[in-house]
Image 1 (cartoon, rainbow, N blue to C red):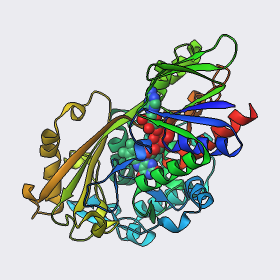
Image 2: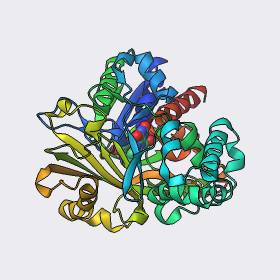
Image 3: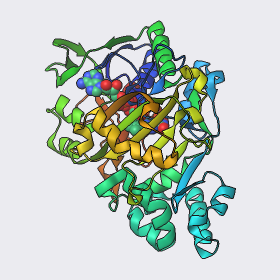
Image 4: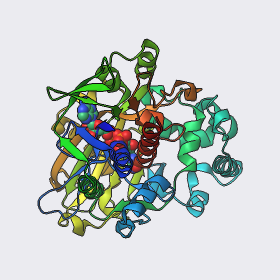
Length: 429
Ligand SMILES: Cc1cc2nc3c(=O)[nH]c(=O)nc-3n(C[C@H](O)[C@H](O)[C@H](O)COP(=O)(O)OP(=O)(O)OC[C@H]3O[C@@H](n4cnc5c(N)ncnc54)[C@H](O)[C@@H]3O)c2cc1C
């Protein structure tokens, strides 16, 4: 079969890998000039490793991604350091990434609340019954079972940070998936995620996959006889099958001929965008060597996460620059999307001073700001009923996106899984 894949992120590239392995003629169309999609990275001339535009790491439970890397023979290039994640309580940061540290965390006292926290965590790790959990909101479930103090100290700031105005609507299966699939060791690829994406793309090309970069697909139409036509950068080409890996919104724009109820389903899915600033600094920000700071918005922080990348991987890979991310998930139309880099910097820098009082503006060597409208799907109550099917009602047209990996939360691991699942469906017809 002659197959077109729209998007050279992990879903698109993983699908291409499996389709080409069984002999199909595959062309990937990618709008940007690079592969890797949301997990892509960039590199300064004096850096050996790339830095992801949006902070990225793998968990040891990411079996689809780690399995693919093993198949490709590159598992010796995956490293799993154990960086420190911290949580704030009364203006101080405390490590919170192991059972011992959770037991020592002062924010929950040392009595009933800690026991409730422990039991809720244990229950969520052991249960597989996410279908019952998706019937209620995380807000109401946590209030009931974890209790007000545990919820307000631990989980509510996370929900507010990730989902802003929708935080009360998110279902409990999202929280379950998050707790279930996470590990304290965090993985990356030697050289950065972009290095892996580039090696994967080279491998695909060597296998005979054509990757056309800088080519945005403008529409997909059903042919009168058979197959589908796509307009890629002004040239119309015909294919037997097409897999789209963009956001649901873009999918609806690309293919308005989809039946009304499928289009409606795509357009009704909610998601959050993200604004993430990457900074290179002259000095280390966290003297304690902390990697990930969970910042509660209610304590006046202007973002959700501050992440010192070079407390995770060595600064020697970045010409001794210290790399820090400051990022937030935001509803579309939020003021951060239209702010200049300087305005955003002015918003974010006060948090740096709270982490290290010695920090000053002249530590900042350079900043890069990355924005995306589609960063985090918002799963509402009974969300499983709203997931668009991969095999669309148009014969030969398939759709695989972050919004369909539910009940799992989005991630490159699940992009690989859904890409390969879509490829199987395309082959089986
Ligand atoms: C802030 C943030 C932090 C994250 N952290 C992590 C993390 O720590 N670990 C992790 O595993 N995952 C993380 N993720 C999620 C991860 O990036 C995604 O789940 C994954 O990259 C999705 O892959 P994909 O192939 O489904 O989509 P994408 O990567 O979005 O790929 C879709 C591709 O389609 C292209 N495209 C769009 N329209 C067109 C068109 N018309 N024509 C041609 N091409 C088009 C896009 O340019 C893009 O390259 C994070 C995401 C964000 C935003």
